Structures are given as C-alpha cells and as structure tokens.
Length: 88
Image (cartoon, rainbow, N blue to C red; front, top):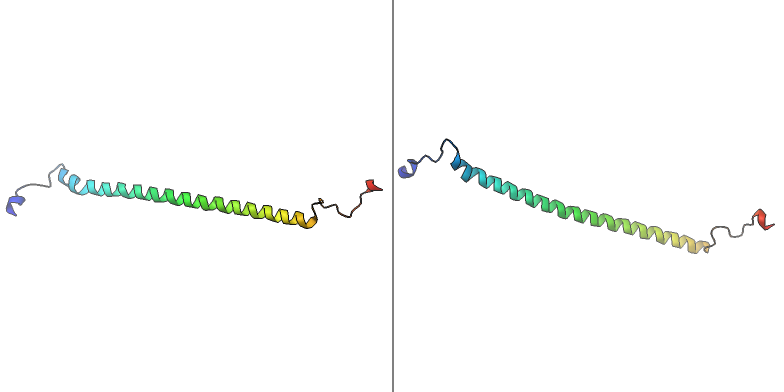
C-alpha cells in the first residue's frame, strides 16, 4: 500500500475527484432526468387520452339523451296540441 500511497491522487486541481466522483454522479443525474422526462411524457399522453375518451363519452351520452327526448316528444318540436291565434 505504500507504493500506492506515494502517488498524490488528490491534486490541487481536483482532476482525480472530478473524474472518479463528480462525472459519474453527473452522468447518473442526467440519466435520471431523461428517465423522469420520458415517464412524464408517457403519463401526459395517458392522461390526455383518458380526457378525450371522457369528453367523447359525455358527448355521446348527451346526444343519446337528446335523441331519446325527441323520440318521446314525437319529434313535433313541442307544439303538439296547441293552437295559436293565427290558426283561428
């Protein structure tokens, strides 16, 4: 170990610490940010897809209720059985 101890790995410029400590940590951080961004993008797509499906479902239900109410009324426009003054 004395042969290894003769080398000054911790030089004044900090190159050793930079190469073997800081750069791997920075690399890990970059990979984590990339992973988080991909996950956030995938979740955004999933949420927007669900939102569009929900809007479409509400629209279809609204149209179905409208059709059902028109079928009950007979499609007469709501003037069934009423006479206006012009009819006299």
